[in-house]
Amino acid sequence: MMRRKTKKIRQKTSESNEVKKVPNFKMTIDENFEYVSNAIANTSELAKREIFFNNKKCYLIFLSTITSSETIENQIIKPLLEKKEGDVTQTVYVNEVKELDQLEDLPISLIIGAAILLIDGEMTAFSFGVSQSEKRSVTEPVNEQVIRGSHEGFVEDLRSNINMLRKRLNIINLKVTYYVLGSQSQLKLAIVYIDKLANQELIQEIDRRLSYIQVDYVDSPGQLEEFIEDSPFSPFPQLMNTERPDRVTAQLMEGRIALLCNGSPSALILPVTFFAFYQSPDDYNSRWYLGSFYRFVRLMSFFVAIGLPATYIAVVSFHYEVIPMDLVFTIKGSLEYVPIPPLVEAMFMQVILELIRESAIRLPAPIAQTIGVVGGLVIGTAVVQANLVSNTMIVVVALTAIASFVVPNSEMGTSVRILGFPLMLSAAFLGFIGMTFTFLIILIHLCKLESFGSPYFAPFAPFRAKDFKDTFTRVPLWLMNRRPSTPKPQRMERQLNPRGWKNENGK
Image 1: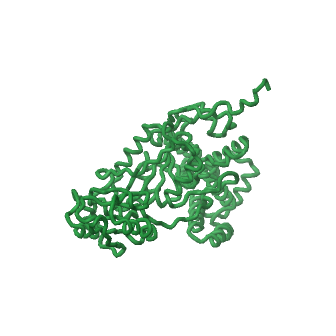
Image 2: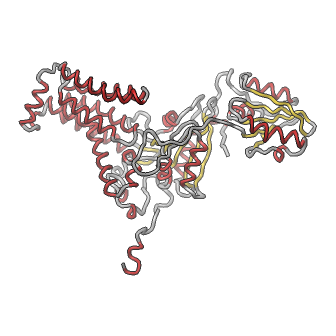
Image 3: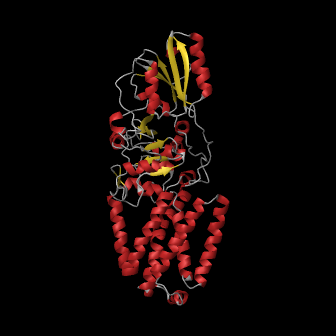
């Protein structure tokens, strides 16, 4: 049942859009209809059917653009006309029927796809769930593709997304709680977690933060994330955005909580750690040593992505002595005719790389591939021939881009690329000392950061040796008997000796 917190979640807005509170219904049906019509700006979508039931005049009103005309005709109007009297709730064939005793609730029900039955002389009305929306077929997630495992991704319909979760988790404790956010947008939000496993204090904290969202319009998980995250000025994402139902169910089974919004093909998972962004479903669908190897490579890519351009700048500007002599002549030769300093070189190429990446995202897929390949080759060759950038810098920037694209989560990949800029600046002014100082600032920030009260840099800060089984690498699944302690689940044990068969009968 949808939880509606009128006082906290709805906010007064401009007089033209505000639905005034009315204590009860008016005496005549026409006055009630006029109120509803005025409340929704007398839109032309509002349809009205006049019928008689229990010898009283009734108006069935609905918005024709978001309701199913077939359902209204066959499951509401036809039964009412045939029986002519009786209990309305027992007469219609609609599953979702509500009795409304506040006139102010009628416009809200209409705009979310309900049909309203007004009865002359009655102080209540009936709401029937007859909403209709176009649904996209389930396809593979575009941003989180895997080699092994499920190829099913979320769609824009909230019910379909919850259905995907329930298909994977056939347990009675899977709990879904609905909220409505935005006084005008009326965004439907689902909080999904496993009862008796998820931490109750965490659930209460989510409820508390949501109650403070008093805005006109909320449209997506990205907007919601900004309202509820702990540190909005941090470059690191503190909630995980995913398009994969299998990833959500795996996180739910660890005691975490998922937020799903109607109209969005993704879910937000909380709380999360820094290392969770470098984990992929492929890690668990492959042999443990393969998954561990690729995860370790991903984590090493973090240092390459933020540190390689800065290291190049520091070496070229201050620390030539750390390079072998043969390599010194190669780098020196590539820099001989470049008139600009290494910092400007690196900044220039990083910005060009971001422009190519952004244009590839905005353009249609066939053209985007051409822009990515041809644009990169043409620009790279041209800037080298024009002596604007050295050959070595082209290699450094290319390796940096590849390292940032290795991250399974696009938000973390973007954050990593942004963090490279302050490191480049510090390297240009103070060399390795500046790099070390900046990296320590990033490390301190990671250690202080929290995600809904849980340490973001766990299991390093605080140090938790038992949680290292699924961090840099992952141990075999049959050794992961306990859940991670970061989300503070109510039950830590998740399996008991799944390879016990090997010791059966003394084998």
